[in-house]
Length: 165
Image 1: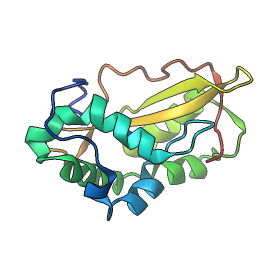
Image 2: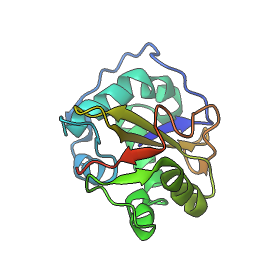
Image 3: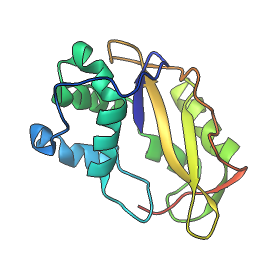
């Protein structure tokens, strides 16, 4: 899950702070549970968090004061939305099965009441698979808002695989 502020996606801002897992060691267990990587074959979430920090979150340093504060704010927002539970309640599970991209999108939007973003990539056999959920936060990072400017079904076909993780 990516956190974007106010639907805008500034990228690759200059930062004096480089990603350091040690700066957020007491958050990694919660991040692993609530912001896991769905990328296959690698399931290393640290790589995802580093990518997100370097590409997007460095642009929020002035708002949040750094890496720890950003990820802490993101986790606080994630506590308000349990995407895996609401998908499970809709019969959609990360078990390698195929689901309708529209059903995944609708299940999230119906419970969150804001437009999410979902993105897909291809697995090694050429199947489109769910790769990323995006929920957007308003500038202060305290509430979820619509993800404006994000494709609702980015690179997804109508039938997508929800890989196990």
